[in-house]
Image 1 (cartoon, one colour):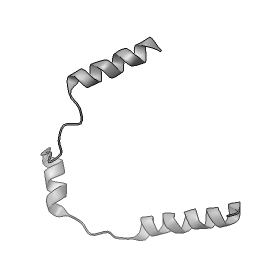
Image 2: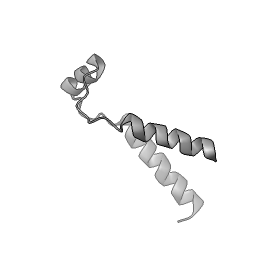
Image 3: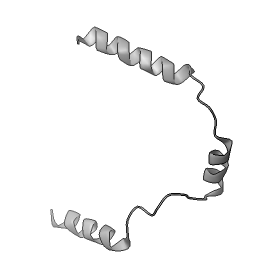
Image 4: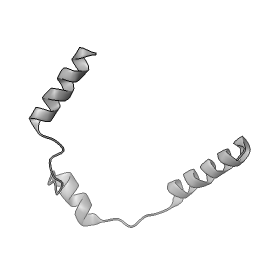
Length: 58
């Protein structure tokens, strides 16, 4: 795909995102604003310490 076609496709996608009105999940928004998390913790402290140590060695 040439640059012109790629740019046109990007513009089309950007317009769709800008002007589309996706459904609003009011309950999910309220939970997010209240700070209630339904997700699992991303990682334990031990894993974070290892990553920081690994980064410092480089």
